Amino acid sequence: MDVLSQNWSLEMPVTSLKTCPTCPTTFLTFWQYFVNVDDSVTEKIVVGRSSPRGTHFRRAGPRQKVCFESDEVLACIVTCGGLCPGLNTVIRELVCGLHDMYGVNSILGIEDGYKGFYSRNTIPLRPKVVNDIHRRGGTILGTSRGGHNTSKIVDSIQDRGINQVYIIGGDGTHKGAAMIFEEIRRRGLKVAVVGIPKTIDNDIPVIDKSFGFDTAVEEAQRAINAAHVEAESIENGIGVVKLMGRDSGFIAMYATLASRDVDCCLIPESPFFLEGPGGLFEHIKNRLKENGHMVLVIAEGAGQDLLRESMKDASGNKQLQDVGFWISQKIKDHFSKEKKMPVNLKYIDPTYMIRAIPGNASDNVYCTLLAHSAIHGAMAGFTGFTVGPVNARHAYIPFYRIIERQNKVGITDRMWARLLSSTNQPSFLDAKDVAESKKEKPPSSQLLSDDDGENLHRENHSGKSYFL
Image 1 (cartoon, rainbow, N blue to C red):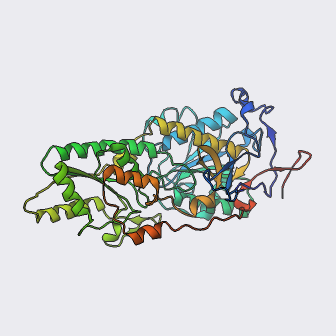
Image 2: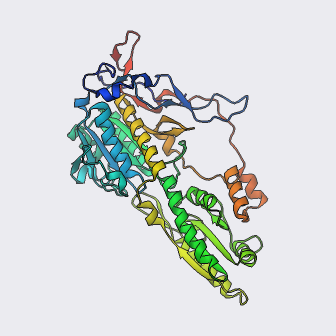
C-alpha cells in the first residue's frame, strides 16, 4: 500500500474534532463524514485477474482527530512557476477553509514564489482579504521561477514559527517542496509541508488531471474557432493555432477533440515530418483540395527536434523555440513553390491569454476540493504529500510519486486513436515506432514501504499519542 507513514520524532497533541472547543460548530455538524483512517484509494482500477493488488494511497478528507490546536497554527501559502487559471481560487479556499473549518486565524501569503521566503515581506491573509479574488486571473501573491534555496527557505520557516506550509506549483515546484520537506525532517521541526499540484499542461502524474486544465481547453476553443472562421473565409485558407504543452500535448489533444474543426494536431509525444509521402505537407495539400481550407493545432513543445537546441530558464525548463511561427513559415515557403496552390495562412497564439484568465465553474469546484483536502491532511498531521483525485477519489500522494516522472499522452492509447479518427490525419508513425511505444514493463507485485511520506502523530493501543 502506497500510503503516508505515521512516524515522526516530535510530540504533538491529538484533539477530537467532535469535542474541540476552538473548532467552529458549523464544521462539527458534519462529523459523520469523517474519513476512516484505514480508507485507501487504488491507483489502477482496471487490472487483470492475476494482477497484484497494486498501489494504494491514503484517502483524503477530514479526520476525527487532529494534531494542531487552532490558535497555535501559523500557516503560509506560496505560489510558484507559471500562471494557471484557478490559482486565486485555491488561495481563497485555503484561507477560508482554514478559518471557517478549523478556526485558524494566522495565515501568511509568501510573495513572488520561493525566493519570497527570504527576500520579500509576507502578506497577512484573512477571509475578507481574499473574498473575491477567485474572479481574477493570476495570483495575488505573485509568482516566479527558480529562487529555490532550501536552507534559506527552511530558516525563514523556522524563524517565523510557521508550522503549516502550503505550496502550489508544478513538477519543478514539487521537487523544491520535497527538498524543503526533507530539510524540515532533518532538523526535526514540527511543520506540515503540503503540495497542491498546479500545471496547465496536465503533466502531473498519478492524479486524474490538474486544475486549470478544463479552463484552458475551453478557452482554446475560442482560438480554434477564430482560426476556422479565418481559414474557411478565403481560398486555400490555413489557420494555425499554437497551444500550451511543453512536454505533454493534453491541451492540444482535448481541444482538438472538443472542436471538431481541426484537421491536424501535432503534440510533443508524436514526432512528425514535413516532406514526402505521409508527411505534413502532403496532408495539408490533400485537405485543401478536399475542403478548400484547413486548421492546424500545434502544442508548443511539438517539433522542437526539428529546430535548433533550446536554452533553459531559471526553473531548469527548456526555453522552447516558437514552433508555431516556425511551422507557419515552413508551410508558406513550401506552398509558395506550388504555383497552382497559393495559400493564405493566419497564425494565432493565445497562450498567455489562456494562462491569465480566472478558472471556469468546473475548475473552481475542483480548486475548492483540492484546498480542503490539503487542509484536512495538514490538520490531521500528515506531511510530505500532495493532494489530488485518483480515479475520482481525492487522495494524499507522497512527493516522490509526483516528481519521479511526467504525465504524457500515449500515442498508442485509445484517446490518441480517437483524435486520429476525428482529424483523419496521418499518425506519422511507422511500424517500428508503434512496436517500440507498445513495449510495457512487467507489473511489479512489490508493495511500497511506509517511508513514502510522514504523519505527525501516531497512537498506541491505549489511544495515547506517542512518537518514534
